[in-house]
Length: 252
Image 1 (cartoon, helix red, strand yellow):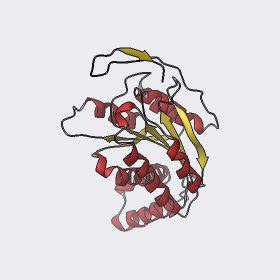
Image 2 (cartoon, rainbow, N blue to C red; image 1 turned 90 degrees about the vertical axis):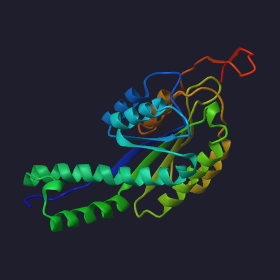
Image 3 (tube, one colour; image 1 turned 90 degrees about the horizontal axis):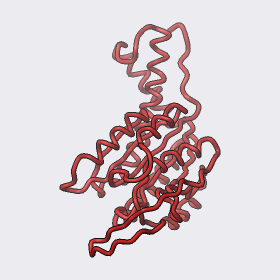
Image 4 (tube, one colour; image 1 turned 180 degrees about the horizontal axis):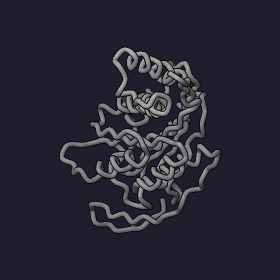
């Protein structure tokens, strides 16, 4: 080849974990698109129960499409596996895109056009780089009222991700954003970027559930972390109509 392949020095990812469609705030796909324009890959994981409609998951597919990422719709029991799989597949996919683009510029061929032997060697290179490249990842976690029975499993999946990131050769930094954020806010930073995963695991215990699902605010807050910023979070008023019929309004 008449040039040398280079891989990204640092990858940036957001992983949105939610069990349903957003019901307050802006368009989550729009937030994902803005993040992607800043070089951040936005992935979406949807927790699926039997008998649910497809509408919430169409929104998640749109988030991943706008964010250049992966969408995975899974039952709760598969969440731990999915979080790790999506994170690592997204890393490999991003590097493969960058390498394939460079190949086309250097040789006029894409990765798919190459001979099997050459393609195999480049795929080995991509896998090696994927394990060594620096990774910054934010988990944007749905902490709405509907997640109450699922939050323990969701937090366990984040802890499983911490364990898997420790096995990488490259530096890994993880941040956590909860949405909603309590006190009437659409989101809250539980932890900025850190590689002290033991301390981060302790912070997960502070997460509480309740309120609506402001996915847009969660993605925007996660995106701001990459700029070294923290949003105070937009305020909203939520109306709750319990099954008993006691209608009341409250600020989260």
